[in-house]
Image 1 (cartoon, rainbow, N blue to C red):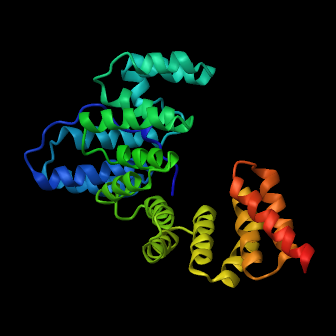
Image 2: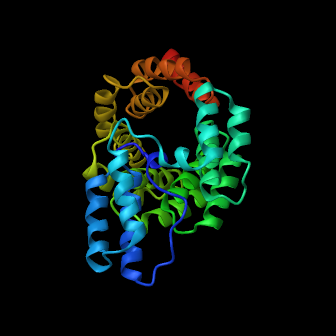
Image 3: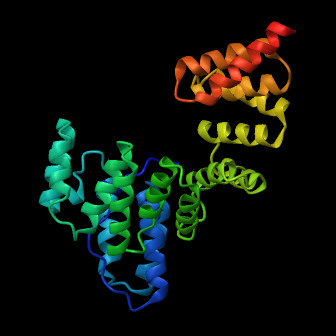
Length: 294
């Protein structure tokens, strides 16, 4: 999925629609625009303009998309909102405190709250991110990306139930979001809903064969007990992705297949890359003991 470019796209005010069809089309167009899918966004904006040729919001968003497609275009928000303009400047300077201060200057502004949620999420400050995404939703309940950010923030604190609720809400706005299906697959995996997790990752991979999705698929296969297939996929992944999680699941598959030597080698790599998983050390020692007693 294309990287979110919302900061360059949308605007703080949307008027009240009299036509529910055009309102729905506008929500869809906004969500496509947020993912950089300008062609699809334009198609829905054209549908609105066929029904309501003078629809200001549709015309304005169409103009914004044209600007966003231009790599030399300036951010619409930073051009029209001084606090956000200052925040962007401070962020470029690496000044975290001033970035937060600028965005916090207007607690009733939707974009300030949304961008604060994004800022805290990017810094792994999940509790703060949750607070601001919730504020953004209270100000503008129909903006889909807030639910995506909220789901990712809840995932960060391992509150998988609330994360699942929010990713489901997000999917009511965009039923073709591969990232949402991948996130939901991971959440269902964590909650022990293996069949649902497998269905979701298959949907994500049908849309885009992303490396991170392939890793989730391998983890699901491991959880199903299909260690051979999981290991094959992980082995292919490990040629391009050398992360703790890849080696962890490679080692766990080896262990399940009674290949203790390779299990130790792979878990050792996982531990070196990340020493945060205490259970991994316990498993490593179990395997080492079995190999010594063999």
